[in-house]
Length: 495
Ligand SMILES: [Zn+2]
Image (cartoon, rainbow, N blue to C red; front, top):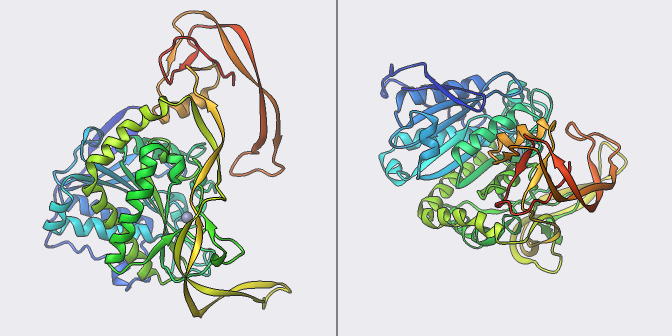
């Protein structure tokens, strides 16, 4: 029925380029995943063709195109809304529960791509599901890493148990997009930011597949670290959302556990929660008070089961969001005020080794055996020896570094890259209307170290120390002022 194309240079333009031409009865929406009995995932062009056809056939589905990715292809967003959506502004102004699902950030981890196709199709073809989710607007990025998806192969995830072919992890410029959310070196990340701030999701889900330790579960959840999300929203995530979704899945016969953050050892010794800093998807979405989680299915489990369990998890999330819509909206709206009421903002955390929860864990016994290809040993999980044990799960983090929240930051002219990112992220700022002299606190970089090897396009600095001084500075007209709260006096972080 409708397919909208959107060109974005901080403005919105829409063009309807097709109209209703097909009948629901004559169109077969069986997916390649189903036709292949759960062994194959479609190519990028076929995913987009599927959603194009779905949006042409069902008025409840719309597809929009946002900006560009590094591959030169646009980034798509598919939207389900019972009453339909005809332009992007309707997404922004909607008061419904907003859910954003990201797929194919690592295209070899295609479980979410297939699960999302099935679930949007099933919702529009089922009146009772439409009634159930009438208060939700469900937004799906069909494939985020378009360039990686186009680089299709069958060998870069050699040990993974399906699908037969898949895309490559790096994007068109070989960036790992799940390390690029806050720094936004890629066009993909800038386009994602635009989608994210358009949808302003109450709940965000990013679908992945994990390697590492072996265990009985086919699916794990990686909720954003709740202390970092902070306040009442963080407590709600930890005490309400996580247990309710686990319970919902358990009722459907799906066993799930926290992401098994274990490398080189076995889970029996206990493990800590994964800390998702803002370079990761959920770390980024947490900055804007969204309840986020990554889904990590396990690569050694059959593809069919992984996709089916991802599908069930997504429905459990929809159910939870519908049932808790009032409290989620309320907590999110108060979260900013909670932060501004504090004097400091945390910027570094570490796991609290004194606190842990008991986690009933279904694993396999592991042992070190001789490697057949090297002279060393390798970790072997014996599937004939399953166990269920209570292990220690360290999921409390404490703040080890914070910054005082200033009245404002001042950004000198010339820092266009930073201004570009502020604009992408809808950070509000003003400018000096005339030359202005004020006394400010200046932070000077006193010392830092630099890594010897580049990482994702940068030589990272660490162990940075600063020295503060007070100075009277004349700021020229037009210099940028970022104001977390109203300006009474100005504190300056000189960049
Ligand atoms: Zn991944």
